[in-house]
Length: 553
Image 1 (cartoon, rainbow, N blue to C red):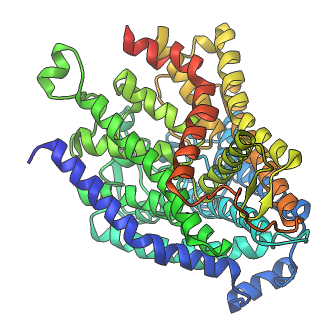
Image 2 (cartoon, rainbow, N blue to C red):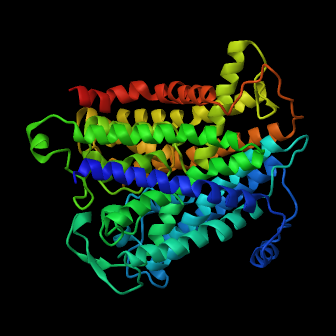
Image 3 (cartoon, rainbow, N blue to C red):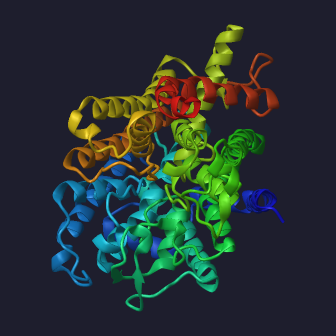
């Protein structure tokens, strides 16, 4: 069986598995977000932190809760990293520099997990478990909580309440992420992923050396980072490392885990708004972009020019040979279309157009299906824009799910859309304008520019993967990329929650003959066009200077 056919069979199996999980998982998430009952463990946590589990919050209070929780998480994680030399289970790891500790604390709190260090050589067990692994849960839960508040904005009328952040956060962690992590950690262990505490030493040849370094609890952290769509791995080689990803099945399962929650959330949306057809329309757009990305990246990596590539049968440089080009392309498309960042191949070694597509995936805002929660609220913002554009075309006030979209709502949507491109382009432009930062590029020309563009695109979109080939562990890059991560995470949340509050205050408008049906193929096509035109073309000049120029050279 050819590697191409194997790759497509893996993709088809993935589609089938995601389709089977779409309804039950989406319904379960909707149930936990809308249930009036609290588990005993949840009530205990509410008493400890002084939260009234039955009291809803206004959107500014919900937002302040998100920001306060995240700020405390950054401070705690920063302190833990800086003090790890003096704590238990440090393994003798030296103290991390302040700028790198800042970057790491921001990275994991924002669900980015960008790493400017080798995890197995820079972090002790306590920081990995009590710091990084915990953030893999709660940072992912924050994204789902925010999209839950936005959905309530569509479903509630004449109120200023959008839910309770502390209740949402607790339920998502205890009822969704923890149970799934436990179950799938056992599955990965059964398939060869190492799970231990002190029991082994790995030879870190894939991370650039041959020095034996201590290992750690790999299987549980692997599931956490995939379910939470986080990229941070214990080993610098990430999911190409045989301890983290030993077999073809574990590779397929990891791709499934990083996609399953984001693809199930449109079902949650449809159930909460009382119309499953709305969820089908959203997931259809997500699915179209995912299938197109997988196909185009796979084609770019197999169809190539050059004597060496023709002799090898494809662009095999940087690919994990246990999985091959097709599985590497499938992983690359899935990880850059979600807020994951985990990789099983070296994106810097992809062909110019294949690598350019991974950048473009992130530039779309990681909405197909995107991160846990962040992908859905990004797609809903674009749906609002699509409905507004359609309303202008027919000369009537646009409406979406019974809510009018006026100037206030469109300002929030527009600010959301402009935030990430501004961070990416300003950050990249500044880096290229500074001689010292240009010197950090290990490649010159268009490819070197692509490496810098990838770094700021990954940070601003909270993805966490890297093109590599660039020295980012400097005071400037750690600081600049940290700012891109924190602003790219929390500024959009401000606009999402403000939009949720604005929608919740409205009186619903009954549908009429002039109302645009948002559950039919016409809307799917319109929304897809808005994604490409409004978001994708924003970055076209930057892409033309990088991967497109390299590919046409």
